[in-house]
Image 1 (cartoon, each protein chain N blue to C red):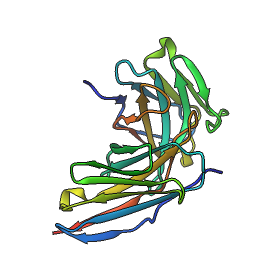
Image 2 (cartoon, each protein chain N blue to C red):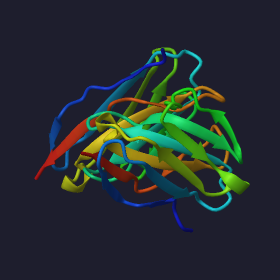
Image 3 (cartoon, rainbow over the protein chains, first blue to last red):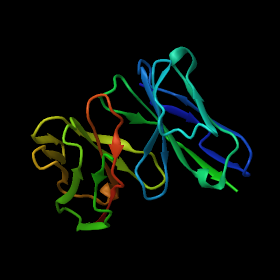
Length: 113
Length: 110
């Protein structure tokens, strides 16, 4: 069974530029999560989707971050414009239902110069 | 504010010894508890989940949960250098987001 797929794996951009990350969850997993992880910290939830619906986006900085999960499968997370403080690893995870185990993709390491 | 606390380490143990990793959590209604292993530069990998009080064993790994004390631990028997990584404790309660600790860095010395 294929795991969670993310792309790109690495991204370097200049501040104020836009950037987008893509995630394809494990087949059959209805719940999809986007996390942000800074060095030396645990992952922090940005947004959770149940199928197409964003059910928890309270930690998403909506002035510059947006996300979508059309058709309830793959998802895109966008930052526009990026700031220096956005440099981090962006992780996507999926699970078959809210309370069960979450499986992470390889992540996208973003560097904003 | 729901919190999950872990000692950041590093925890150094000799090869073949038992490594004991500890985690406390603040939300008394927490129901699901997970241990993830994260190698440097990699993403978290789920290694154990536990939902009820007591011990759960899987190979060299044993998770221990004590809800009354709000405490969950991970024991790694016969530690190997390949176990050297950061171990993340994660907790949630029902339909709430998973809350992660900052992780404990384990170093197994050959």
